[in-house]
Length: 148
Image 1 (cartoon, rainbow, N blue to C red):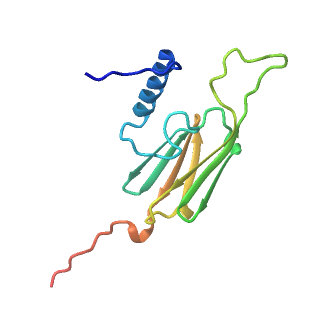
Image 2 (image 1 turned 135 degrees about the vertical axis):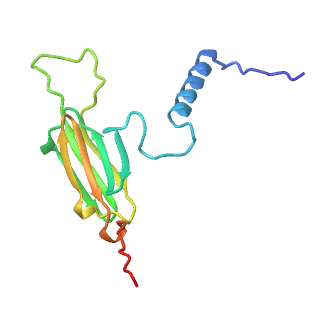
Image 3 (image 1 turned 180 degrees about the horizontal axis):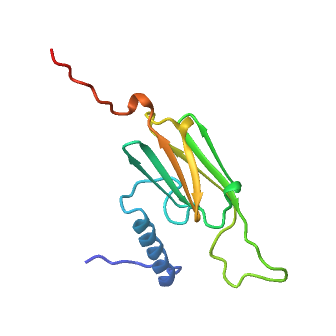
């Protein structure tokens, strides 16, 4: 039988809180990989997926005017940055402040078969959509079969 000795500084509440934080961390990233700046709490949240023509990145940017968003490319890196400001009436203060404001920036790496110089962006209803086409040489092409 093993005896467990607790130090005099043992705090059961603190231990439970640390355990809860660890469960939260594991549930956010169940595979255990470090995904970098991604996941819950990162602004703007983003989904990136591919289709037959290339990749599409969709970012949620509610309250951000399209003119306050900058999109830059360098090599195979796409950088999205901008600013979201809270507008409070004079003499007002927050009762609850859950939506962040201020500067934001996200950088994404894309495969080499995409042509970031031909990327196009549109913003509608707080959703920023960036379409990145494949390079012409990476697109599938049909080869005609001639009768011999």
